Length: 74
Image 1 (spheres, helix red, strand yellow):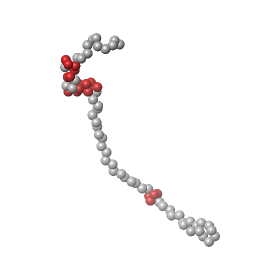
Image 2: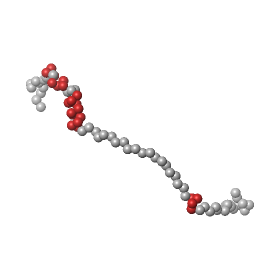
Image 3: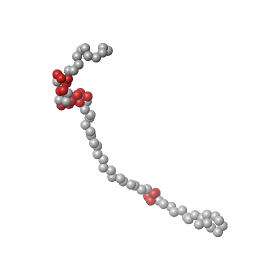
Image 4: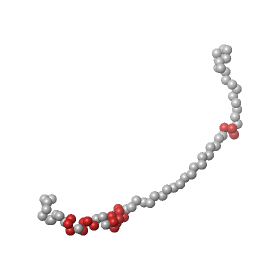
């Protein structure tokens, strides 16, 4: 609050000890590690496709619709 002579007045400073200025905050955090298996290798993927039987249609003789004389030479 300004004094009568238009000068600011401040309250007396309060001295605090070092112990009063120190604070400590402790956060408890639970952590865990998730381990994922590695991705399948290309060879593993090819083995799975072959074992699934999904390519067996290529063994069907009706799939042989082209001969050596079909198409243009490259």
